[in-house]
Image (cartoon, rainbow, N blue to C red; front, side, top):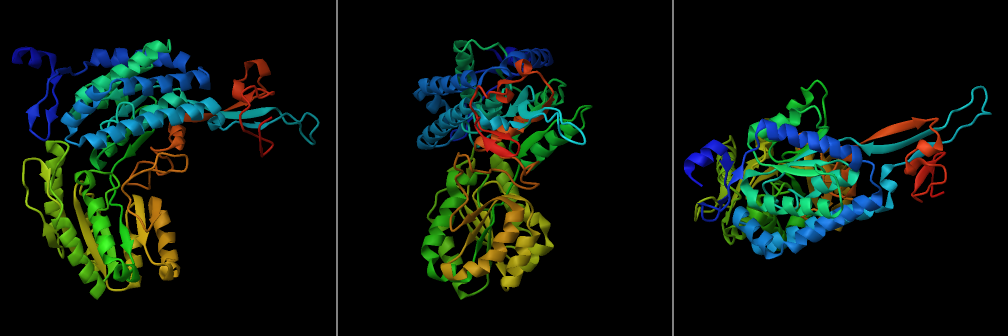
Length: 515
């Protein structure tokens, strides 16, 4: 295709971050007319899809997983080329993606997730009879999913947001990330083929390429009923503001930024310096620090053991290699954020690796006193990359002050010995108010996909800390409760019918029963 044709068609192309070379494939930016047609199809599909049984939706989700696996090496290779991530990481992501789909399939097949609540009529109640009242959750409508830059599979086209929305009964429109357009195209085709095999209406899933304006148009479309986003605070807040400025505001479930602080008490530092230094260095630098759970702040009390630990941490950082970052924008933002943090009042550099190639994030470590940290809230801004800031406290009271001053976080970690458990109790109480996940003697990188996981936290880590983007509870973002009053049994959804034909767990008169 000529350059003239590309310009005319408004196309995008992916770039290999390891080589900075343009990859094969022209991806057309969706026009406003195409966006309108896409959303209209999704809305029509919703009228059918929302009424499918749990078994039918489960079959669809499992078929998607099968189709993704059938792509084989072609998907892995393209994702490696577009992300710069190692093959093993991509294979692991593919497995996680398919496991998420199958987990939601199992959830909707069983059916209790609709939270059916029943209070039967009491015509003889005095002084007033009670009518029959039944409540359950229903799908909200078409959902827009913005794919993430740092997880080309697990948080992208068929990732947790898409899987949970489809499980809820909502059609999904994906806004592809410009960094992995080819990967998105392959996975989107797999989902479309799965929909065709399951005889689902056209529009139950669609993918669009575009730029900032594309996303803005989608979020503002009156037929779109919810948005899921994983990315920067700036991007997530912009979408949130757009959605709340609509004549009909809609929820934006945005995961934005987090420093995931690790608090290490003195005795723990004294006894486990070597293992802690290695563990934390590897966590900070995992995937070039491009994890939303990357520990960007270490909080410790001053002391000889702390000085020795920081020396060991510097050595651990020095043994690590700079790694390719996901794209030029993330690389430049990392350099800028790191420079701003290190040039702040009271901050001093402890280690900064030399950059040994283009778009490579250099592992970096700095320190600051708790007093300076408490005076400068800008030091809590996320530096997305292999960087962490050690905050040194005068005493345990100041350690608590730092915890109290923290912004909302996805995670917070406490590292202590058995003998320090009593000291840690007060700290845990504070951190449970600041974070969506509190970790004991471990690192925050790595998020288990399971029923009990909560991947979310108070603002500004997310726009709504009540909800998770990982685990089965993620489905609750895309439903709303409806009460059915005095509705004849034949017209009730199966989940609310009197004989419980689905045999799901329901709350009847305040008790959980399966009858």
